[in-house]
Length: 143
Ligand code: DGT
Image (cartoon, rainbow, N blue to C red):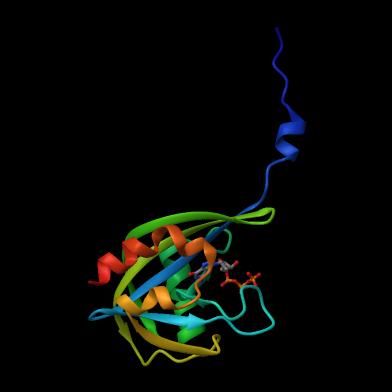
């Protein structure tokens, strides 16, 4: 018997965006950025990072994003957590890397504001839904 592809199933697949995000630690605090008004997820506090470009290694993508968004030269540490989430039709897979070493002062080149947030204060802020499942683990890591 001949096997044929199923175009109907393929056409139902949603696009997935690979995203990298940084857990930038300073003692028991982590650096969060406020997403600017006008864009998607405006007013939410996020872990700095962004989309991986085609053909880019995740760590290289994160170092590039941290330079663009915060103006720092970061040494990307270990991959700690990953999370998946759907925003409507689009899925995101986020890889969270730890960053313990960087050069420069983090500045809000992209965000409306950046700030150091204590582990116990994180839950008081509004973060993207995509972070919900890993937030407790991140808080534990900081304590
Ligand atoms: P967009 O979403 O089309 O407005 O594009 P950008 O450039 O504002 O988004 P970008 O490059 O930051 O991509 C990250 C995507 O992942 C974006 O759709 C928001 C989502 N996301 C969810 N949680 C987080 C997080 O903690 N950090 C970052 N960087 N992105 C997150």
